[in-house]
Length: 289
Length: 314
Image 1 (cartoon, rainbow over the protein chains, first blue to last red):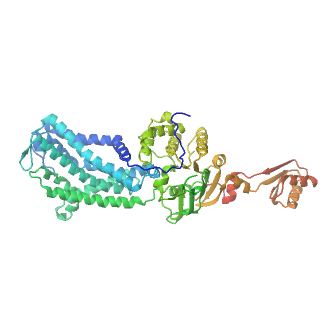
Image 2 (image 1 turned 60 degrees about the horizontal axis):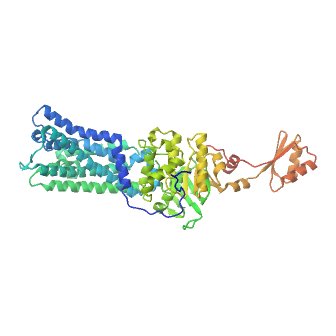
Image 3 (image 1 turned 135 degrees about the vertical axis):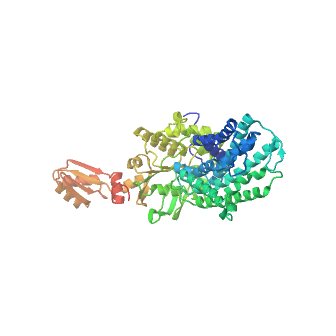
């Protein structure tokens, strides 16, 4: 027939398997190429822009939100737009974004029916969970980095950048401040990735990705609510969200690592527990979607 | 054909699936010879799709074992499934990706696929199903027939030894149906085994060499199509205006199930040669206006196998 003709019938050779990042890259293309997710990234980017513009046109007294107060410093250093935006978005937007992506992992494929075709390729189920989760982790890092990047850029444009005054009162240079910001992004991404592990587990329970996303958001909001009830302080160390706002410790001199370390441990525990649960649930499940 | 030895591309013994108290598939022993086009025939709800899902390892059997291309499943999935192309319960793709990108994705997750040949193989598969012109369109814009074609292209994305096709002509117009049947025949001619699940008797009659009949979760018949036909008892039909006399002659010759209709008599031919029946009728003075040996068609065979019509199983 034509030049594109390839043999359609195998000769009986046993195919060799190769290690490759193609599956992961395909996942990332699906996540970042999807319009819905691109719109979500725009929403994430809108927050630092709104904060910066609002601070530029009016000069309000320092407000008080749950975490460290960065707003008062924004006008003197644009870098703090990024920190203020991260603090604000931790309340809903960043967890929501991770919930949408992680809730989609298995349930999304089941909902479309593509899950059965992936498994028939074949894709080993453990490998599928590993690759899907890797994509969620990358998304968590990308989302926090994206918010910080937009914050730094708009902050630089409207207020300029310069040496930063830390929460402990010390001044550090711009380069060191950017390193601290990167560390904060990484710390928050780890926490969000732990939320993503919960999300992937929920995603193995249902064929409705929206339902999974809502469930994860509810878990996250409940975690915030429980964290705000002082009578439940014994529970607080076990709550994922409890540790998120500890990121301010990275802005002290010297860095107070106790809280950060515990936050990372808590996130790791969540990842292990829910990854195992997802594996136990999905590994043997009948796929009838 | 291959080093794996078994001369069956698909083999199962006692394969059973229960959902709660309902038995969807009841201890079936499939034997699909290599190189055959095996028509897996049964009405909707008879357990065909559940069987296919078990064969591919999507759901676990409640009992029984099976193997594909000589490898036991599900343990051999990583080894054997790359050589199996499958279409299960209709097409399913990412709606916001193009047909081509959907195939690329399936190729990307296949660890045995060579990334250097992806584009060539994707183009070849799309051309083979007549979808190359629409390859860049988003899947959501595809008609049902185009979606079905894309699913077939996915099944042909890599060289396959076995194709498991569940209702591949669903949603196709008559022209598309002809093309898909020609495609299946062509792939089989290249040496692949095809397990074709269908509820269309005509499809089995046109392209299958073997047939397995499912009925309420059980495999009630499984043999080469030619043998199924041969085993089916042919009947004689005598057109005459003295049917009762004709019927008497047929009975005297030892034919069974003799019946009489208006101006005709019938009977099961049995071991008798048809020309002897005609001679006996003429010798006895029965005016024979017409005579025929009628092989039952597949639908009649199906009714005789299942004891009921070709309706949805409950």
